[in-house]
Image (tube, rainbow, N blue to C red; front, side, top):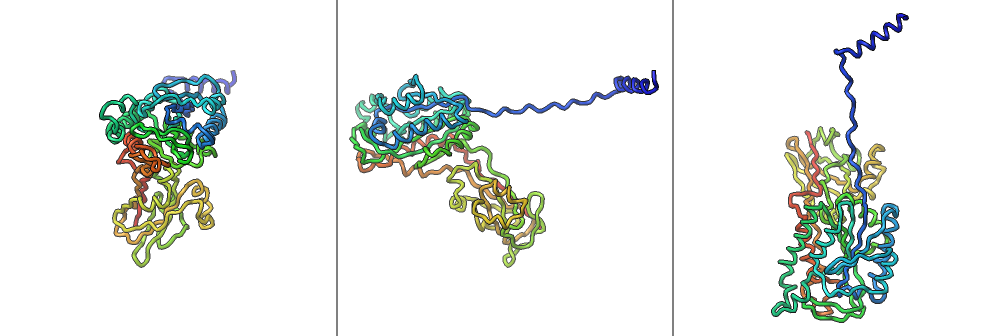
Length: 428
């Protein structure tokens, strides 16, 4: 045996001996599989109050079929088929294709149920919605008791009297169950449509409408936060969704926006330089302030909270050992990219907003803090009415809508949560 072979064998035996430290194997961390939508359910309410949307050339008859075709044909590249249902006091599965369902609601007018109770409908939908499902529900969303309750002596005003109490509370409970037991979030879109048929008041009296009054209807989308966000981004790209009168989400927002990129040159004033996470060597006074800009991505916020006017009115600013003000709030699409470093352009383009901040004085090193509390948009209350007995008052209005949505909102409200929580260290 050659001396080279002997040496090689010796090394092998030494390496395998008891004193050898076995190399630690690197185990790949398990990757969390991305959640995917398994099924899309579509529920159409079929109480008597919905019949008027299905007569004549109404927005409802145009929009809903187009939305169904687009959802089935475009969401996740058309891989998912819709499961269609009628819903009122029970759920009735439609046995047929989506095209056959569209034909049925366009021709047969399946609005035969006398009444429906919103909280019970949402409970039924929750039971039919699995963790990987998206459920869509279309209705006029009028909070009411069944006919039998209203016919009892002394109950003619019960819908109005109990809207803020029991009816609102039942909506909160329904969505608390969705949130806590199934980790579901919700989105609601509002639309207006001409209406040809009978409208039922809060006292269950009939007002005939012949297309001269615009009536609202709503589309709710319910699902796991991750799936709903994924679905909603595709839904918002569909022309058939526009125009809508309202859009609100409940529980869809996750963690507050904390990050941002300080821009070295953009609208810069005064003496300062960049630190790892903020500013250093800052010298500021009333006569010689410092101005700097920070870009951030607010795309996860609902539309109303991203509006620059809303931000100016509701951003809460705090400061330790310094005095500062918010000089400007700009959309990144509107800023002059020529004033940025080349290395900053891509990051800014990926963001949505630029905050321009003015430091008027620095007493000691401290922090600039920007907070935007999570507060739901309340403009839906202008669409609500509590006395719908006159035809002149119900155009574009929904009985007790305020209490229905207040009930849902209460299930998701977290007074300690922020949309934005940005802190910028400032060092003298």
